[in-house]
Length: 181
Image (cartoon, rainbow, N blue to C red; front, top):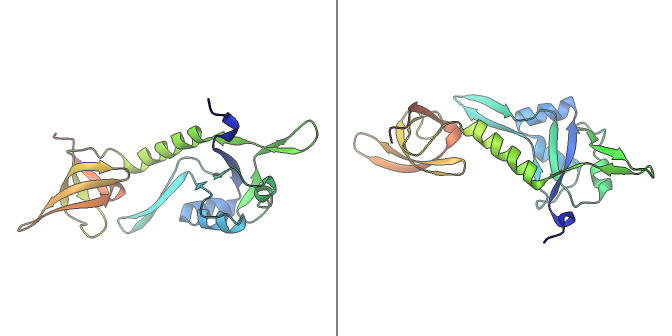
């Protein structure tokens, strides 16, 4: 059995009001990477999703006020972000010896949050659904969902003289008719 200490965990960051605003506009991850000098290999999870739909910016929050960075870096790296414009504090507690111990979440808990967020964003698109495309190149057209691939749907869109099969982000789709099968 693998040693649980080797399993991936996530450091919990409490955000400032500025950090929450950056989560709202979609710029928080880039800002955290800059503040903490994170490499591209270091995972960051902001439990919200920002996208454009119908000409406006929409943000869906699973949990406001927090962000998560994969553990494994020197603890001082996380603490140096405290009191910056985006990070209010790193969730931690004092050990009996007085040292700060960082609180973490398991990778499984963060994966569950990612799945919950994905289901909030995607909604009820299913294979066989008749959908209206609300944004992008095929905006205003209807199509039938042939397959689903993570956050995308493979659609068949029929126009007067042409049928197209294309891959479209599910956030750009609205279900027209319940699954007709």
